[in-house]
Image (cartoon, rainbow, N blue to C red; front, side, top):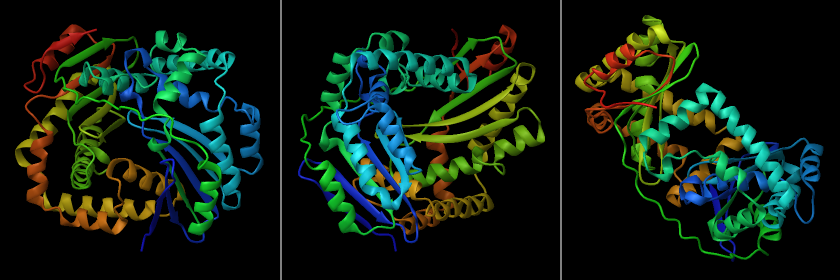
Amino acid sequence: MESIQKSTLQNGIVILFQNLPYSQTLSIGLWIKVGSRYENFKERGYTHFLEHMLFKGTSNRTAKQIAEEIDRVGGYLNAATSREYTYFYVTIPKTQIELSLDILSDMLFRSLFLEKEVKNEASVILEELISYEENPEDYIHDFFYKNFLTKNSLGLEIIGTRESVLSANSKKIKAFYNKYYSTNQMILSIVGDLDWKQVFDSSQKFFSNFKSHSNPNLKISIPKKSYTFHYKKRKMEQTQILLGMEGVKKDLNLAVKISLFSHIFGGGMSSRLFQKVREEKGYCYSISSYSSSYRDTGVFSIYCATSGKKFVDCLESIFQEILLLKEKGFTKQELEDAKTNQIGNLILSTESAEQKMMDMSLQEIYFQSYYSIQDRIQAIQKISLEELNQFKDQIIGNKIHLSVLGNLNLKQLKQIESHPLVDNLIIE
């Protein structure tokens, strides 16, 4: 039986712990409930920039010392910025809990944000931005979000722009930190073979002395989705394609339904899209579908890469599968197979300390509670064929969004624009 220990320090930091028997690995995450969608226009990319800056030296350690102390014990330290949260995480031998918490608290609360380091890191981030732009598989996703979730911060690039990155300075980054990095917006999440008293006492030792310095007003608006066709020309062999449909917000029951939906339709090698478009027709090497869920909305996406000469036939084949699903729905066997797949994936995820740490952290961020593996298995088993076939109508509308990057001609674009699912070609 899964058991989650939870407590809140006086400064508002939530402590989560799950014991993983016999594991020699300890996974620790420090989560901040702020992501890129909370930035205003002048702050674009600052959430990501700040994530970088917390590795650049504190009043106790240089950047090199931070890296050396983790490397010395065979650990791994990293961080990531998303649209709705940021997290810093350590994977380390379980005997090193105090070292891990010492370094994380040092980074989070004693970083210096020196001007020379800000300028150096701006250069690094600019190189990262260029690498995204020059990698078509990365670029198409930013292009897609900007076009589909138009005029909304949720659709903007997490990394920011050249202008926002190069204009950053120590004063601006400190102001952003003081505005958003409040202790009452933080979660410290730990998974490993330790006891709760040791985990709580160590967490209190390293994190309880820091005060909540602000109460950020996290304003967001629900984006309006744009069901348009956007094309950007780029000279390259393959054409990158992303199709967008309605998604679901963060919710256990909706998450179960969209996962089953996606797995059957395009989530794996046995899916309809993979079998029809890749295996039977040979139109592409890679094709998949996936769901992205947020506090108040969601996006269902289909990604495909194909050669320019196969572009029209490939998309027509995808459209046929969408329309077939819309008209006929799923079969009983597809649902049963998807259920066993999803249950199997859940069971396999219980073996990884890092996966369990991330799972309970995200549930705390979005639900302030915890659904066990058994809870989620029961939720999967309860979904009926009729329920899933009704749900598909929430996802598949009369129009879809289409973002395309490649070296195509106007005739090809017009052929796709004439399809009933596509509307309003915009060439950028």
